[in-house]
Length: 136
Image (cartoon, rainbow, N blue to C red; front, side, top):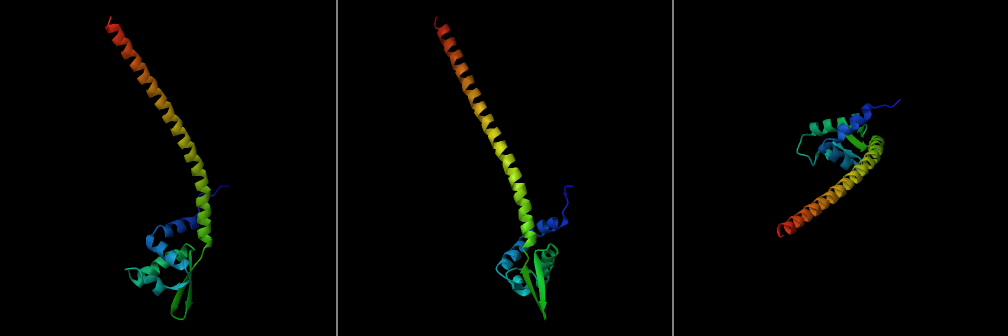
């Protein structure tokens, strides 16, 4: 049976929909970091960054290790791979559909151009007949 609702995928896409969370993922792609280090470039509170990290954790994109009072975050790539695979499957489907649409539009434009040329040709011939008939 086809499964249309995948909550883990929904959480991943929801998490990466926010630019701050994407920036956090970019930072963690360079290696593990403390929450305080992740928060440094943002004009928001440490608490706000911690909330963003929690959303990333719930989506399975980030893991947190607590060492004493320090919270270290690291990137978890499995859910990103799953999301990328889902996108790739849909990309292949839509690319084939869009290619077919492009071929259809091209054929339609070519047919319209040919019809316009014929109409101009017919109008020109009628005009020429009218002129020759009027000069008699």
